[in-house]
Image (cartoon, rainbow over all chains, first blue to last red; front, side, top):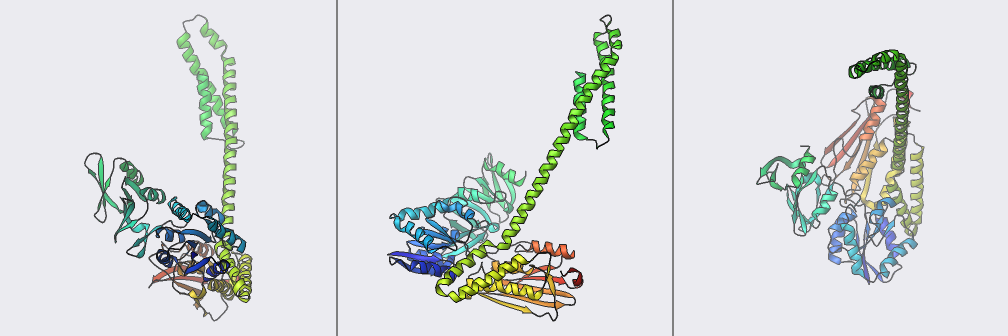
Amino acid sequence: MIRVIIIDDEPLARSIIKEYLSEYPQVELIAECNDGFEGVKAIMQLQPDLVFLDIQMPKINGFEMLELVDPAPAVIFTTAFDEYAIKAFETHAIDYLLKPFSRERFKKALNKFLDQTNMQKQKEATTQLLNSANSSPSQTDRVVVKTAGKIKIIPFRDILYFEASDDYVKIHTREGAFLKNKTMGHFENTLPPTVFVRIHRSYIINVQEITRIDPYEKDNHLAILRSGQRVPVSKTGYPRLREVLGL
Amino acid sequence: MLLAASSLLVTIMLQFYIPEKNKYGYILAIVLTLSILWLFLSKYILSFLLGNIPGYISFLSDSIFIRAAIGFLIIGCMSLISVLWYTTQDQQEAENRKSEAQKLSKEAELFKLRQQLQPHFLFNSLNSINALIGTDPQQARTMIQQLSDFLRGTLKKDEQQWASLEEEFDHLQLYLEIEKLRFGNRLFTIIENNTQKLSYLPAMLLQPIVENAIKFGLYDTTDSVTITVNAFLEDDTLCIIISNPFDPQTSNFKGTGFGLHSIQRRLFLLFARQDLLQTSIDNNMFNTTIKIPQHDQGNNYR
């Protein structure tokens, strides 16, 4: 039995997938979700084999939702995005369905999944998709994290600095620190470079939060934030910081 | 050598100053002055350097006319070439600017067209219809009718034109009905027309505001949502208030907020006033107020 979840904020969009799925006796629909929050919960609890996922949804989009589940499920995207926008992740997803899609097109996508005997490989493809920088077209001004079972949306403006922490990145905000399963390189590449600067191998700082830069030991500096926190600036990071600040 | 320097000088001068038509006399004067200058300078330097060679001085004074003619010709030629060169360059630049401007306006037009058609809304609506065909063909038919009427209305409306409040509200209703079908029981609308007499407003002005309200009120929330539109007359001004709930945590907005700048711009172009679009926030409700002066309607309406 193949266990499937549909995540879409439009009931009619879910019902067409349901209708198309009814042809397949070997597929069991185990949950329908209205938004990304429900989606995260359902995927974590039910561990589905396949997820039909809409991209534009309230609060958190499909990509942001996928970032919050571990391990990532196999995904077929359903979206009204135009073909150009979707090209970016074409190579990684099992398939994507452009709304409205026909029964034939749906069959093709599902068969692509069914033919793949190695499901593990498909799940890895989803992880890979998420790791490719800029894969998410609408996620431009916020980071979504999970903390104590709850989902938190952090707008960029609330972020003080990022700190490398083993396999995670610690996001420091005024309300405390949150962990995100990403690399420093990912953030360095996706954050707006005029606001966030990699000042150290282990730190990316929001320059709008800096009140002072003090010299510290030889060749190094310390950035003092408005919150009073101190963040080290390395020898290579200092010129980058100066450039962004226009010094 | 001095001749070369003079030629260079004239080229440089012309780089900064291209005479208008019929003012080539200036160039002639410059060329003449430079030639004379060159003549005297060269004579002075040559006499100074080679004055001890017998007969050279007399050779210099004998050949003065020939040398003057040669110098004048060379400098003149040089300036002619420079003038031609710089004029063509100027023309080229003007051409480039022109095509750039054309390209920009084309892109803007295309963008507007794309916005008007709202591909996201259109494709999602078609997807809903696709679903309804299987489960509720009657409803599918209704939705196709509404979508067609809405699209026809959108295409028909010219932004320069004025429309009656009733027309605009009808158009809005079509749009909102489609959204209600898409989002099931999550969207509620209250549309009130409290104007006692016929009022007019620029066509397609309300539409983007309500789209904004939908975008932040409906697309970005998971609960059910009520969007209200209330129109009334205050003295000789038509006031329309559009209210939508929003989530301050996920909605990121600045200034007048929610991308209403183009509407503000349009109102400014029509009435030369900046105070006709106002926004306010209370209790997680976002309110947009637009005011349309009703005097002078006779001149503006169609």
